[in-house]
Image 1 (cartoon, rainbow, N blue to C red):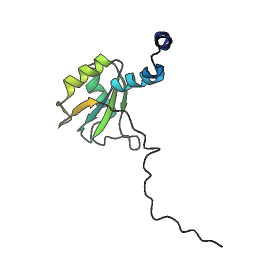
Image 2 (cartoon, helix red, strand yellow):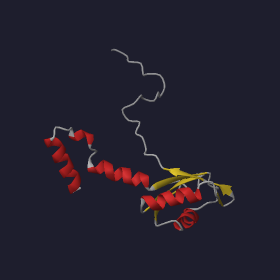
Image 3 (cartoon, rainbow, N blue to C red):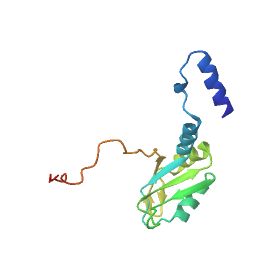
Image 4 (cartoon, rainbow, N blue to C red):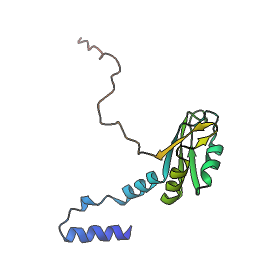
Length: 132
């Protein structure tokens, strides 16, 4: 963090816009996304424990996310690793491999996009205003 602050201070002295550097909180979120993998094509019988066991041979698995409501597989899940290198190794080794009778597809997870502030969703016709 201190190195980033120094770089911003140096860049402001050289008249380079500090906005070119992302804030430290943004760097942390980029790192988190880089270690999170999307796993698609899962069998509906795959559990979070089974997914964790399959991926733990490639590094320290920090988190496995399945469907939040039913706690069962909906055909995809997310696996978070402790480091980028472990995530990359798991991606290259597990992509296209069978797991519980189905071929899985592994890719880096994409950050969630917020739809707030964009085009509103239509929810039926507008209410009629009556003047009294």
